[in-house]
Length: 144
Image 1 (cartoon, rainbow, N blue to C red):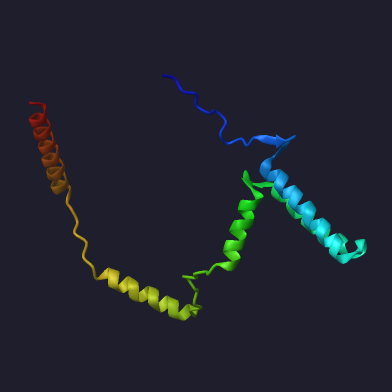
Image 2: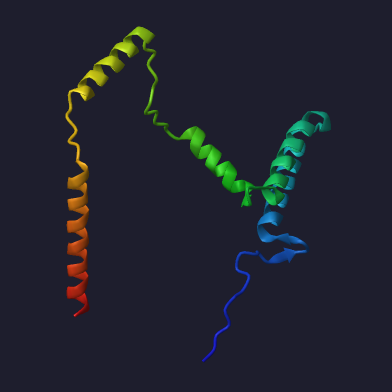
């Protein structure tokens, strides 16, 4: 039994001419809110600035994309960032130069006292030879 698999699931359907349902709702909502502001103020001179702002926001919600994401996602992230709590972990402390030099010299003295073992040339060869032998013995056992 064969089933049809949808091909373009990321593309929204165009319902109102060249507009999707979301775009249509954003534009109608902005237009309705602009008309409501005009009706409440009874003066075109007073209501022009808020109407322009509302229509610009509704047009950007309908058409503008930031990094191939809808503008509504960017606005949501901005509100979450500005209203959410912030955690500051690192705060730089100003340390005078003399004190930092003293700290560096104290740390270097501590590391100078640590003994690092050195491997001689013959020890290194012995070690590599024993590892090669163990590897070949192990690989021969696995082949059998």
